[in-house]
Amino acid sequence: MTEELFLKTKKHLMKYNEAKQYKKEALEKADESVLQNYHIVITPANTDDSTKYIEDFVKKPDSFTDESCKKYTSQDDYEVVSFKKDED
Image (cartoon, rainbow, N blue to C red; front, top):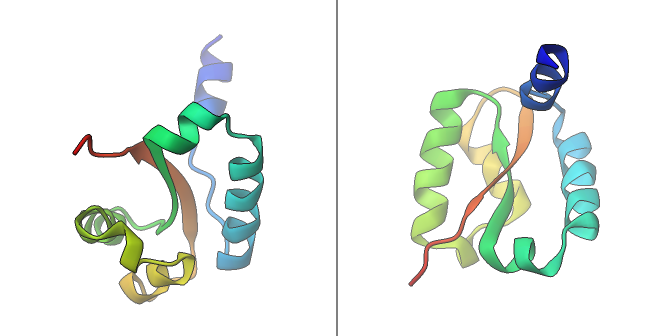
């Protein structure tokens, strides 16, 4: 059980093109409630860079594209993350 939990929470670092494909597959598999209630985005793998990206993203999500994450890091490691949309 502990090993299974570890595998589910383990970070999976990807290059940008891998992350883009992973996001595409995640969107195809997600049910409608997930799509309506959660953002699914590509973020820099670096925690500080990712935090800054998400803080800026939530202010104006429509102004961001998948490639926007590249402006927030000098590295080429990314993750696909999901987080709840604001209930405005």
